[in-house]
Every structure is written in C-alpha cells, then in structure tokens.
Image (tube, rainbow, N blue to C red):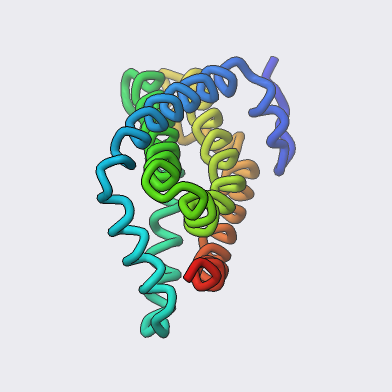
Length: 199
C-alpha cells in the first residue's frame, strides 16, 4: 500500500531512517570540518579573508542584483546536487558525499573564523553563513532525504522512475526551495549591515 503524502508534508520525510542516516553523515562532515578549520585558523589566512569581507561590507553595493543572484544560486545548488545524487547509482553513496561535504564546508568556515579571529570570528560567521544555515541546512537534509526515498521507491521498469517517485515529494521540495531562496536573499541584505557593526 502506497503512502499518501500531502502537498507540504515534510513530516513524512523527517520521520524516516534515511533522514537520520543523512543527519549522521552531516554531523560527521561537521566534526571533520571543525577540526580542520581550527588548524587552518591558526595559520592567519582567515584573518586576511575576514578583513576583506568587512571592508567589502563598508563599500557601496554596485551590483546588488548580481550579489542576490549569486547567493541564490550558491544556496540552491546544494538542493540541486541532492536531487542529482539521488538519480545516480549508488544513490546512497552520492547523497552521503553531498551531505557530508555541506557539513564539512559550513563547519570549516565557522571553526577557521573562530580559530583565527576569536570572538570576532563568531560574529563574522553568524553574519555571513550561520543565520541562513539555520534554514538552509534542514531544507537540504529534507531534499536529500526525499531524493533518497524516491530513489529507493522508484519503479524499476518505468522510464524516468526516479522522477516519477520524486513527484510524490514535490510539495516538500517546493517548500524547501522557497525557504532556502528566501534565506539566501535575506543573507544578502542583512549580512552587510551585520558586518558593518564589526568594523
């Protein structure tokens, strides 16, 4: 008997073993990125990057449309990678790699900033990546879980079986894409204001 899924029923995706499996892999990436970032933060390269970011925030935004488009693409590419990984074989390995890489990159950025800048790095990380990640990470894990479930439930004899199975989760996918896009655009508008406070 097939499960009936409401349009915005994210709870169905969240309550699966696939979701817990992907969270565990994300946390493995976070741990690895944290240790690596702390070692890199002591090298001083993060201090130069932070000064560049704060100086850029003080300048007038010449192409705010391009910045918004870049932030939007940078956020939605993770969702697209999850959907693409679900279509590949073995899907579990590719989805695990995408989720772990996202956890590594986020944790590396924060840990390197804190290791190189101390308390200033905490505020810098929150301004540039931390606050939007509170929305984008759960959305990415939801999309990855939906891709995992769709790949495992795809009818093998049907052409385009993965896309057919993925259609069952289209509401959750649309909601996650919308929330992630809104978080990316909010980061573009709010980050310069928060970075100016650090000057």
